[in-house]
Image (cartoon, rainbow, N blue to C red; front, side, top):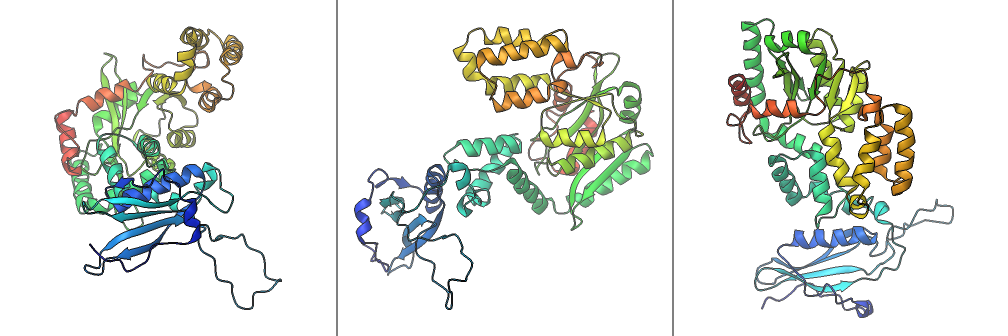
Length: 443
C-alpha cells in the first residue's frame, strides 16, 4: 500500500464530521470538486482547493482536500494599526471541508466531510459571486458538454439552462456559453475565413447584384458573414413587407448559428431574403447583421418582422428597424407558455379555456379587463415570465396586432421550411465554404 507524505487532519473539529457523504465515490478529482462546489452553492458558500497527499513511491496525488474559502487565517501585515481602514474578513479559520482519497480501482472516495461553518452563509444567489461559482463555465468537462449540446442543435440559452439544472447546479449564463462557443470557433476556423471571402468576392464579380459583407474581430479573424443573391434582393422588393428571422444550429463544422431571412411569395411558397452565419447571438452581432441586411435591401425596412423572444434580438430590432412592427413567433409563445405555467394547468382544469378566451379578445379594452380577471383567478400576478410577456403584449397578443398584414405567417415555420431545404446537403461536420456552395445547390 502506498505511503502518504502529508498527514491527514486530526484536529478536534473532526468530531463534527457528518457521515452522509463519507464513502461516496467519484470517477475523478474534477467530478468530486464540482460535486462539492454544487453543494456549496446551494448552501451559500464558496470553496477552494486545499492540501494534497502524494505517494512516496510514485509521486502521484492520492488524496485531496476541498475546503470552505474562509478556511485558514489571513496573516496580519506589520505596522497595521487602528487607523488602517477596516476590511471585511475573508478568512476566519472555517473548518468545513471534503476529503477524498484514491482507492485501488483508481476511483476517488470521500474519507472526511465537515459540514459546520463558523460564519454566516450567503443566500444561493449571493453565493454565485464567489470565485468557485464564477469559473464553472471554464472547466474542461463543462466546455466539452457545451460543445456536445451545441452540436446537437441547442442554442446558448438552452445549454445554460441544461447545465444549471444538472448536477453541476451552477450559475452559468447564456452569455458565458456564447463566449466559449465564439472562442471555440475562432480557434478552429483557421484559413476557412480567407476561403469564404475569396468565394463570395468571386460571386460578386460574376454578378454585381450579389451582396455580401463580413465581420472581423480586432485580430482580423472572421466572426460573421452575410450574403444575398440577386434573386433574393429582387424578391424582397416585391414580397418583403413581412419577414421571418430565425436562428438555427447544427449546419456546419464550426457550430456557427445559421440565420436566414425568409418570406412568402404570391403562390404562398417560402422564399429567401438572404442569410448569415454568425459568431454569436449578442445584441451587437444582431445589430451588425440587421444593419447589413437593411443596406443590402436598398434601405427598405420590412413592415413586419417575426422572430422568437430573444432579448438581444429584440433590442437590435428596436435600434435598426424602429418603424417596423415586431411580432413574436406564436409557436415559441405556445412552447414557453407550456413550460412556465405547467403547474397551473395541472391544478386548474379550465386554465386553457380561460387563457384562450383572454388571448382571443376582440379589442384592447376587453383584453385588459379579461387579463385582470385571469391573473386574479389563477394568482399569477407575480409570475415573472407572464408579467414580462404582458409588458410586451403589443408583440404577440392579437388584439394589439390588428391592422398589420402578416401574409398568413405568425411563426418561424417559414424559416424552418427553408432550413429543411438543407437536409442531406449540410450537417454538423460541413466546412464553411462547403456550406455556402451546398447552399447554392440546395436553393
